[in-house]
Image (cartoon, rainbow, N blue to C red; front, side, top):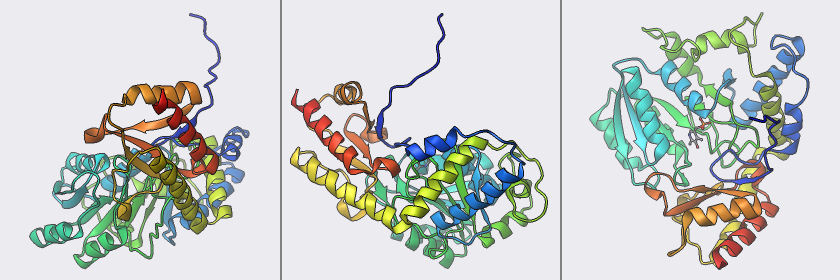
Length: 373
Ligand SMILES: *Cc1c(COP(=O)(O)O)cnc(C)c1O
């Protein structure tokens, strides 16, 4: 074999993630690697944590990036906050809810599953009913923005229901952070995790998480050891923690942290509300163009995600062929349908740096041409 350096073709990423990475973030990634306990790195990490608090709209002290992708953020919340034998009400309205059920069961806890149709948000009444049937449930877990369907659920109302029933809340904000309104403290979210590669314009591989004081209290009062050494937040806290001397826990992915820092700085400079508005505006532009092409949305406007547009593949159109044309002729990636939407829907992402007018224009031009031939 003749090995050579890998030079990927630049693509425009308008799928369910990873999404387009800002050039500023890519440039940050290539800066010199320094030691992960170097005072300069430690100072950068303090800033990164402050920027994360801003992005999450929280004062939670335990707010930090897990050195692994969004799935590890999910696992971090479950392994730290749930003990064997406990009951967790898990809302399932897409792929990522089913993964939460997996997490709960692997811990040896019981998942009380509240099912909703794919393409629909979590039904508040069903969650209330589940709590009335299981008043001993320790926690409510749900996905704020279901990337498999493009649906937004009412995180504020769901966390209120959890609080009313004396339960903690675990919220998947992988696709919502930076893309739609998310207010961790105002909404009383106890544990939240996200991902770097969706609406943050960053490379994949890091998962920001935040625990409320109530969640930290639960962690500290555990009867059993956290079943994962790597994800045990009481250990990681000594590494990322603000006070005193930092002790080695694992080697942080140093350059990836520069990238996350830069992406959060971009968000801060733009302003969180402005970023939410930009995603909305680009969604409106895309919607107008798609409607002109005769392409319909699957999700009702009332709970549609601006950053993830699930649309019906027009009748008689070959799914793989069209996506192939977009990739080969336009270097444009859009997402295929997942689960029950496989072969029936496309998922067009407008996440982070991808939520720009030129991307919308490219996508519409490319789709028009691919559908015409
Ligand atoms: C992408 C995604 C995840 C998983 O993140 P990875 O970085 O792929 O591990 C979890 N939940 C939701 C809602 C997602 O969109």
